[in-house]
Length: 143
Image (cartoon, rainbow, N blue to C red; front, side, top):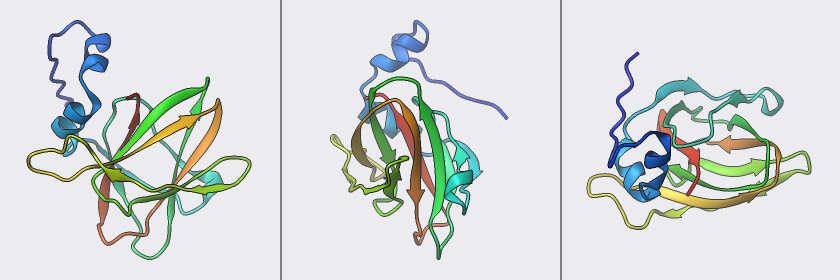
């Protein structure tokens, strides 16, 4: 598999992080490795955190799960191309529903949605779907 990275102002990963998240999302919303959600929350498919694109296969009639672990408290932004794709985030304490809003500024040729997350160190699981789309674009990274 080939990965294409557009570097504005180049200078390594730090330069990529300096690109505003909305601009980055508009450039990368059609990319990503295809992954499947897990139907069991405790066996959630692990995703990478950062400015990483994921194309996620979603079940049409039941939720699926994606997991990630944070080593420290952090503020993240969850991005998706389907406002009904990610409905909740799970922690060891329980389930919290989330509501996405339209990404500002918006992209010229695709509608994207976001939710800001202030999370403590620990394990998290995203509840994904069910949704009408066969797969959705998701990224969880730094604002």
